[in-house]
Length: 621
Image (tube, rainbow, N blue to C red; front, side, top):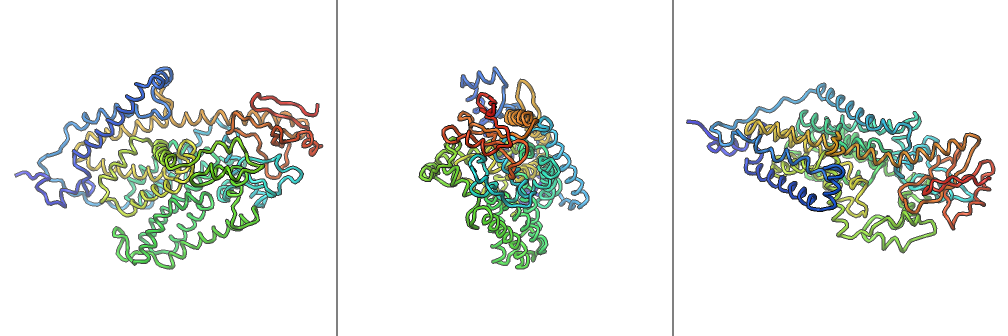
C-alpha cells in the first residue's frame, strides 16, 4: 500500500528535501493571495487617481515608487506554474542527507567572483560622471576630512580675520576648521584621495562587501545561500548607487559585514583572534557611524553577554563552544581604543573630549536638526547668529506620528532599494511562517535589522531616498532572501517543480526593475538615481569649470550669494588649507560686507556669483 506524507510520523512529515518542510500549500496560497490582492489594490488606487493616471499615460507606466505593477503578471501566473503539483501524492517525503560543507577554495572563488561583479557594477554606474565633483553636501565634508588627514592634521585654524566667509555645510568653523563627521570615513578615503580618485575607495568597499556576504551566508547556511546573497549584493541598486557617493555608508557597511562574519565564527570557536577581528571591525564602524554601528551590534552584544553569564553554548554549535573571557577582552579592547581616539579628536577640534564636532556643528548652525523628539521646538530656543536659517528651517518637528511615518518609509524604501518590496516581502513571510526552524545566528541577523531601525526612530528625517539611515540593513535583507529562496526551492522541487521557474521569474522581474530601463514601461532604479545625481553634479562641474577659466590669469576669490530657492546646493567648498587658485566665500546679503571682505585678499581678483541667475560679476572692474 502506498504511504502518504500524512501517514508518516510528525518528524518525517515536517522534513523535506532540505531537511524541513516549510508551510503547507494552503499557507503558501494564502501568502500569494494576500500579496496579489495588495498589488491589485495599489494599482487600482493609482489608476483611479486622475492625476497619477495621467502621469503614467503621459510618461512611464511604472516609475519611481510606482513599481508594484511589473510584478502583477508574474503573481497572477503563479497558479499556472503550480499546476501539476504533487501535493497529496502517495509517496513518502524523505529527509535529504545533509550537504557536505563547502570548501574554503570554492567559497573564495565565489567571493572573488561576486566582488568583481560588484566592482564592475559600481564602475559602470560611474561612467557618465567622469571628472565631475560630488552632489551632496556631506560628500564635500568627507573630502575635506580626508584632505585634512593627508596634511597630517586633525583640523586647520579658521580664517581669523573673517571666519564666516568660509562657513561650509557640515564643516565646523569655530576657531578650528574641521569636518563635523567622525574620523573613520576620512581615514578610509585618505589613501584614495592621495591617489587622485576618492571614488575608487567606495568601489573597492562595495566589492569587498559583496565578497564578504558570501562568507557570511556560508557561515549561516552554506555556500549556496552565500553565493546567491553575494550576487544579489553585486546587483543591488542601493549598493551600486551608494558606492558612487563619498559618504560614510560604504566603509561602515564593509566594517559591519566583517563584524557579522567574525561574530558568527566566534559562535563556533573560542579563539581570541576571531574576537579581536570582530572588535576591530566594529570599532572602525563606530568611527564612521556610531549610531549605526551600535544598532547593528546591539543584539549580538546582548546575546554574547547572556551566553557568557550563563556559560551556555549555541545549540547549533559544537558542544562546549561559548565565549571565553580572553575572547571577550579581545572583542572589547578595540572598542575602548576607538572610544579613546574619538575623545582625542573631540578635544583637538572642540576643546572638550566630551563634545563632538558633530554636536557643536548642530548646536551652532542647525539647532532644529537636533536628535530627538520635538526637535524644532527645542532648537528654536537655541538659535544664534550663525544659524543657517534656510537650511535649518528644512527640519520637521518630530512627533510620534511623524516617527511612525518615517519608520514605515524607511522600511519600504530599504526593501525597494535592496532588491524590491515584493520579493523581500515574500522572503519575510517565509521567515515568519518557518520562524522556529531559523537558527539563532539567523535570528540575530533579523534582530540587527530591527535594532538598526529602532536606533534611528528619534530622528525627524526619513533619510536620503527615504532610507539612508538604515542603508546598512541591505546585505542582511539579501541574505534573508537568499536563504528563503533556497528553502522554498527545496520545497518546490518536491511539491511543485514548476514553481522554481516562477521564483526565477519573480527575481528576474526585480532585477529588471532595478537595473534595466524598458521604455515606455519604466526607467530602472539605478538609471533614475543617475539622472537625479547628474543635475547637481553637472551644475557643480559647470561652476568649477567657469571658476578655473577665470583663474587662468591669476588666483581669484568668488563670493557666492546663497539662493533662497535652493537649500540643497551650496557652492562654498574649499580645501582645508584655504589655498589654491580658486577660493569660494559666502556672501550673505545684509550680513556680509563684500567690499571689506575682498580687501582681505589683495592678491586675488574678486568675483560675485549669483546661482539663481547664474550671474558672474567682476568686482574689480
